[in-house]
Image 1 (cartoon, one colour):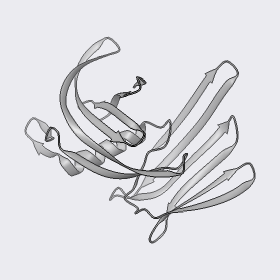
Image 2 (cartoon, rainbow, N blue to C red; image 1 turned 60 degrees about the horizontal axis):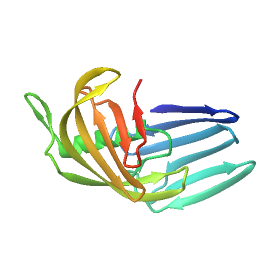
Image 3 (cartoon, rainbow, N blue to C red; image 1 turned 30 degrees about the vertical axis):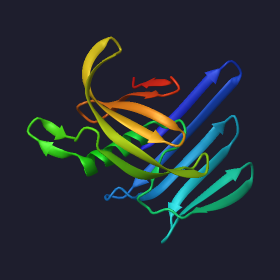
Length: 181
């Protein structure tokens, strides 16, 4: 899964990219994050036998930090919302089941996931629960979407998936909203 983030507000410019590779069993193979602007930095997370290793550069200096986390840990880096979609797919796989009308998810069932934010060099547990189907207007078109609630130490997010299980809307408890193009 690859992703790019670009932002320009006056003289403040930011440009970042990420690449997440998972095994067929949805375990971490490698995660790479790069920032081209305003500074050149990068980070790579790879698994070892018993922990994850983050190697990151600031300027020309190479640093390394170990995290006592399993390869099943989900990457949730800043600015890359596709990673929330991957986390939602993990939830769907673990909590939901096939029904004639599509995927059936028990409303209100919470699952916990361990996550790592390489940009912040921090880990935390988050929980996700299915909030039901909702009619939501996006870009002037009403759609029936599946709502999920993501809760963690850094705040709560609501997000909505379409019938193809693509993330189409996210809203933070702080009022930030993100819509898919």
